[in-house]
Length: 430
Image (cartoon, rainbow, N blue to C red; front, side, top):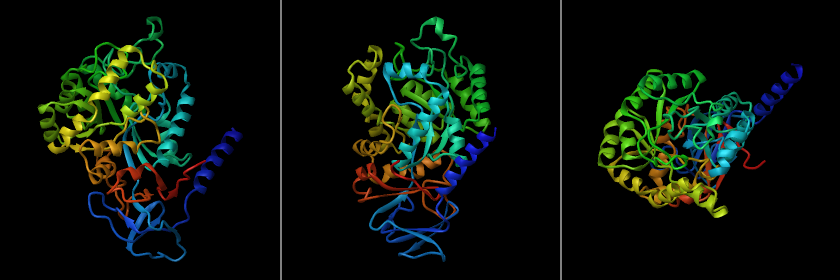
């Protein structure tokens, strides 16, 4: 017990030692304090106790005794937000199946922490973790307590689907092994689905993630079509909302997307094949669309390394996804659908989250609106708009700096030069 207490005290002391002595002043030539608006010129950002106190014109030294960090001619903007990650996942295909049944909960937690640091160093100070079975809830709490460094985590716990649906962890396993897999996340019928939500809330989740359609990585021959009935989806959403939790929905085809939107979902993940009714429902419900275009990068890289990385039934869906990705966004943008930034990192590479920006711009967004998607829009979706996503007095001191102007060339966000999260400087290397 004494050894355990000493270790805990050491961890907390280590985290505390990384806090910048307050107050601090960060200076830069250009500052995008309010994404969607024009950037400021030379600005001094005064920070105390992890929060922004003031934004001052010009280079000012701030209160007496302040520590000054002069970022020179770099461009400063709020810490970025990735609304769709899987921190405990790194592999895909057959390797992912093996990893999922051989990794211990402790291993998964440590992997999530490692991937969280890759993400934080890439400039993403907040993430929404959408569906991992081990360790990320504990990591969320450890980061919040200051025991370890990492991005701020909004966590969905285990994603809910129907039996044989996208989130059924027994797909492709031998029947005699299936009873050993925890399947509290599966539901069939409205009452069962209400219970599944309550079980995740009991675990302490921040939101609920469900799947109303099949998935690209599902090992089942039913494709990416609708898998959940409206009464099931509505039971989930109504229960979650009653308990104060938003609902994110994995959905590819129009049937599953539309059922989710009719049920009152807060966001649609992927949304690959919308129809006219989908676009109407997005506008009617004001739900967010998270395109997750970066998945194609992960697929291409794994297949380049090993052409047999995926079983045939999954590879066929991957080839479809490679062909169609981006077309939904090209319809959503001119229709006025609200977009929030999300990568599906875990399918794509952790730490390469900013690759999504280039794809968003390629398929219809401007650099400015893509940045809004990764800041103010994502903060609103996560229920954190008063804390992150902009640089205002009273908000968390989360900011990044890059060389060049991301409003002109969004690719500069792939190389972040400085990260501050909650008033702490994040080391960009070990």
